[in-house]
Image 1 (cartoon, rainbow, N blue to C red):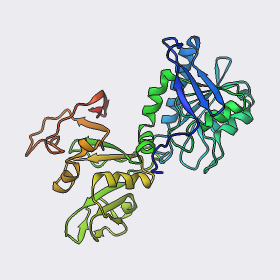
Image 2: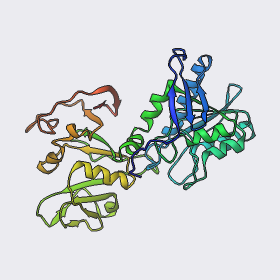
Image 3: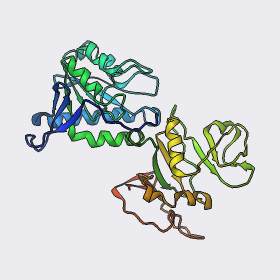
Image 4: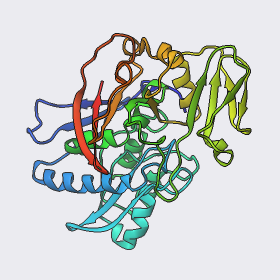
Length: 356
């Protein structure tokens, strides 16, 4: 799962900006035998494309916290301007979003337009190919939010649908929202590393957990360096031991019992992110509230190595007195700008989010 994206030997997605109107783009998928597909977002259908693709993203978000290492995907079936089916991928190993949407639409999927937030797959994994589900349902055309960066999938789903005479269009208007939906999955596929977010949550909060029924709980990554042969982790109880793993540079015994311990040859941030991606983890949240010397040494060169992608800062409506250096002083003396800043209120607190 940690492999990087490799170039497709036969296909090239080429925007034709010279002929595209301002609100849409034309794309050609070129193969060894010439143009095998043309994808268009018609100007007159632009608003409806955006509406239905946003609905796909909303469907996909229903599975947030459940799908890793798979991406979140939503699908909507539309015919004669009406939605007859919709669905999302609930978790790894379960049917894909396209299958649930087609089941919902039943016979009305024939000659309908299928909107899906991510390119349908064309390979057998835990589940059959999504492309075959569309072909068997006899949908007329498919609008995708983005192509899949997974080299097993990339462009192959589009090519298969076109070979079955199903028109395929890329909805460029909502491509950004579809990419943000699966930013961690995309990053892992392109780099072979987990998507890293630095956070500074309020000290009054406990370690982050999900309160949603059935959601996967975070896997706590504890880094231990030095010559100490024993490590006690007081915030993890005996029953939650499987939710943590200790990364260390030498053999160590851990309390409570049952926590996985991995001894690494190289204790640096890049190798840790690669290891986590290979284990199927897409997102890594680095909480530096109590960052001591060990973790600080790992973070010193994070900016030059471009290992972090996102920053989260939580602001409480409480003024407290600092007993030492500011918690935001990490990574040596480096400063860096944040872009695409957003903020939202969560339980009376303000959560700031920005990208590096």
